[in-house]
Image 1 (cartoon, rainbow, N blue to C red):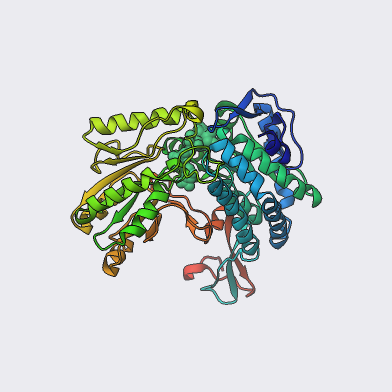
Image 2 (cartoon, rainbow, N blue to C red):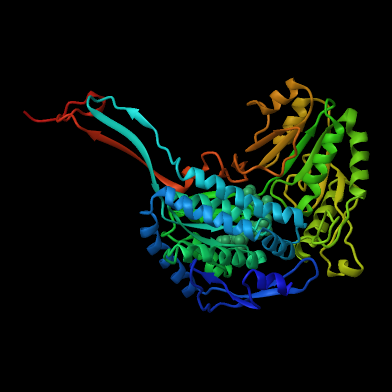
Length: 510
Ligand code: NAD
């Protein structure tokens, strides 16, 4: 553990506030980062106080005035160097992600790879911040739209993707000409600091001013609430639970700021009678058990046709029995711990409610004990029989619980799929073209992501990522998500020497 920290430039106690090139002497309380793998303290963070937060924000404001004047392709060059610096530390950073949030090594490194990929994407995007031009209705006038940098932006991230989610926002924000103030989850504070330290060298070597990429770790009162209410941040991008997003969205809206919300999901896979069941089982296993059920895109519901309900259930139980649960840093382990004891309690509460509401546990759901398991964060993944309208099935329980729900026809299955408050990711397994087209049509899935013969998790960075309804409506990562990080301006230039008004209005005095 010590070797990994040292490798990444971290010490026993680390400053919780940095401006990209300098670290503050923070005045907040000490935060311990405890590994869910073994309950040991990995390291400590001296959190930021209000005063530290103020210093960071003013640096971000000052730096914005300089950074916005750097040509976008040059900003892309910096992002390329950041991507290369992270590429060189992929293994070490991945190991820290595993240690701090308990993901298996391949998934942790995969998440670092997502950051590398978004850097590559952002480099290209830096030369493609296109606006439309249009024909004016007035003679000898030119009209076009352009995109300008927005300002210092706030980025709040969840514990479960401590590298990727920030990078989707920050790397696109950087090429857009914004400076970034990152408030990471307190449950993944060291990963954020390690990342900031990897990037620090790039910023220093390019003689960039402090304040471009900032990190500030602190309590909700000292930092979180101040950041969302801060008028100096025109955009707050927040990833986390629906409850958090509801609050953040309201606070940001009350000051007429922009928020980009990436919140909880309640993702379903429809398995049709026309599906390749082997394919479906493999996808469901990864989607439901991967990251111990702690992805926003985790498969939580399987809506299975009555004809294949029993064989699918049997195949899933057989697959679940083979999942090796343990230290995610060890080879062969497919499922690590939940993030903490509170998450385990929440899972148990969810299972108790399910049974009260008429559901049945078919496999798993136990808390493991003995040896490494005694830390109290390891559980067996769980398969349950349920109905879609049970109150507990309508919620996102952030744990490896999979609800199996039978259906008779596709209209009913689609109704179940859509009939939850959240709208992040969805999928259908079928080899029937007609079924897959219905699912993808206006009468099909209402989610931000809809897949055919692929599970709901593991999105690529090239598409816009996000969901509808209680998931918050935000889009980040690829496609044209960059536009959220810029301000749009419509320009009209009159080179006619006359003063014609739009809509042919005559207004003047003789
Ligand atoms: P959380 O809501 O507990 O915390 C998320 C972040 O919000 C943390 O940094 C937290 O400190 C911060 N926060 C909470 N209250 C705040 C406030 N009042 N002001 C400012 N910041 C505040 O979520 P979590 O447990 O870290 O993560 C799990 C949740 O995140 C799940 O619901 C999951 O689905 C969701 N998630 C969504 C996406 C997505 O892209 N849609 C991605 C990852 C995780």
